[in-house]
Image 1 (spheres, rainbow, N blue to C red):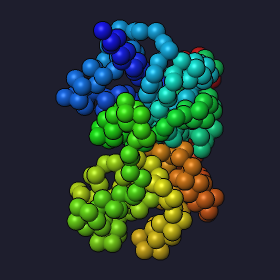
Image 2 (image 1 turned 45 degrees about the horizontal axis):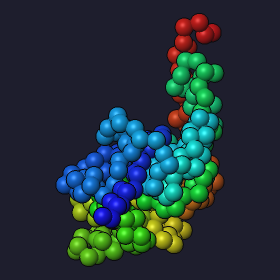
Image 3 (image 1 turned 180 degrees about the vertical axis):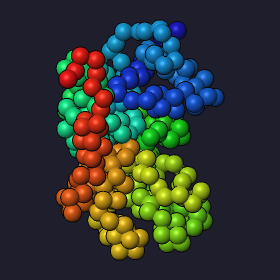
Length: 287
């Protein structure tokens, strides 16, 4: 009698994040029944307290690396994982917390904590790939549910995932969505942002916020020129436009730095931290 083939071990890990990527996986609902039959869910604390020790066949990592302890932890996860996938904007581009990368993190600690000397944190919020080799990156804040299923299915079938890399603009054209940039002059990152959301914001007459990060070969310089000439925006406006969910993604980070250097626009980002440090009420015992 042939031996029953062992189900691959699936592990889902959390670092600095909001848990939205893990919730996207849980939101697969009916597909979860199939996944439960095809995978052995060995580690997924968002779903179960049961823990099966590694090594693991397939690991999904949510969140960015922000503390010294997390560096050691991602090393260990990589060592225990045959395939490691970074899932979501935090794990692939540092997340919204990567805004710390553009300011003095010590200033931020003084704003938030009464005793910042006890806080152990890194100067930068970085993706998993900054520390260990990553086999695949699935962007999004949060990722698309269908793309998560495609990723897991591709692993089971031994092929590369079929995840599109075109811009949100293509989705707008396919759906007949009126371009908010052309029709209303609304700033929109759709021309340089990767597909995945189904053009959600433009369908409601709002500009794309870049939740899925840069598309393949994004021309941020051309888009920024349009913003400055056609929309009447200033460099100060462009800096926070690129510094959102994927602030540390190379294409967006480069674009924001380019305009932060113009007309002292870097002060736009630093103003909040600097003024808060000056205006914070002294804690008990402080002079």
